[in-house]
Image 1 (cartoon, each protein chain N blue to C red):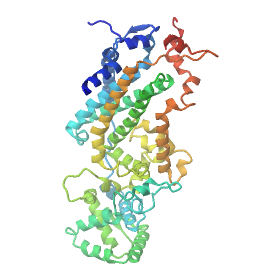
Image 2: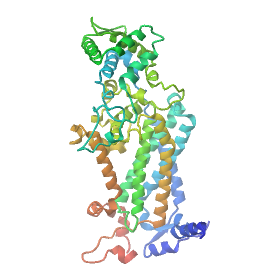
Image 3: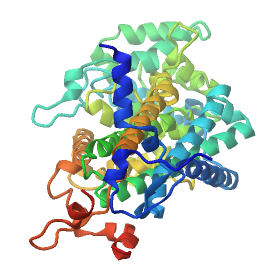
Image 4: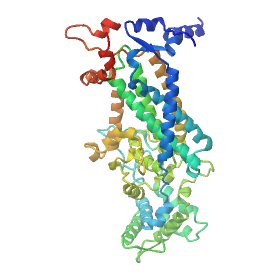
Length: 316
Length: 209
């Protein structure tokens, strides 16, 4: 089946070396068969993780106080996204800068999210046709001065500390919090129906593939609580783990490692520091062949002698 | 000037068919270490095949169908195999100093493949539409936001991540694999490193170059 052939160039390049028959096509076919058997076996034996998403409905049913507190902190600006900063808004809670170097600030607000409106007030407004009490309560809240709104929120938060849950409803002690008890009770009901995320994400179009707003809603305590219970927090190497006993994205080990060690793990600008470090490390890896010292490591740790041992010990 | 003739003569010069598909290689390539590259490609092919099945039935299918879940498991374990073999290949090439003899571009395309594969895998984890996607999207977004690219590469935007995962990034990887293999075959396998004896030339220079 054909005659052995070698280019003139290869003949020169490999002159003086002992040559052997090679069959790269057969090698690829066997490699494909071996990997296919391996992954089919692993898939059949161990399957893969598919834990359902955490929904506002689950939080509303299992921990209604947490859902109400989330909505309240979105209104009073204490929520992580409410004061995040770019790309969502002009807050500064997550705005990171190192000595004036702040690509986040330079990129600006590119996914505008007015948290109180997007996550709480607009979804409630959409529900006012189903709940007649909502229209006047919303109007009262929105027409109040910011200081009045703050006073209601503070009073509600204080009362929430003493609240109890009865038949899935939040029962507050007597509180003078204006329309907030009506609004937040309706909000909890909306979440219990399972329609909160869809209402938050409403765009007026039927087709949509961007769930940014719906997913940002539970950012903060609800998701952190669930992630912590599964050892998935950022400080627990969460980014490279899968829920359950599965290998996760282990190739993210370097990125994840940085979040565990100083100065990154205690820095208020950890994300920017990690991003810059990973970028620099990638740059270094790219140019290893031209970096004296790094390119010489294999000479100091001569693994190559093991790989080519037959060549070194064979007939010269 | 005939462009077609120029491309043809360049191809004939840079990669004659005997070098593209050689049937004779130096004896020192008979080592298991040389299998890591081909095993990485085999894993990539398994990823493409299982990925095509998942795409054909749509991103929701595997959550509701046991067959779909099995195909997803094949895809998941293929990516584990892909990175396992790729990292072994990368370490092997590092310790063999495979960039010697004008092979720096091989190393660079290899690292670009590694980086593109990490992005492809990340977008894949984000396209699962389960708690894992939800959590890593919200956890991972902060680094991209801090770098000012959070809107350009929005981890929470399913449509964007899915499009990147099933088309653009696999295309980039396939093209880079093509360039990488072209360079590997065009330059031939690197010769074993021959340390310089004190005050002398390297054995490699006297024997092979």
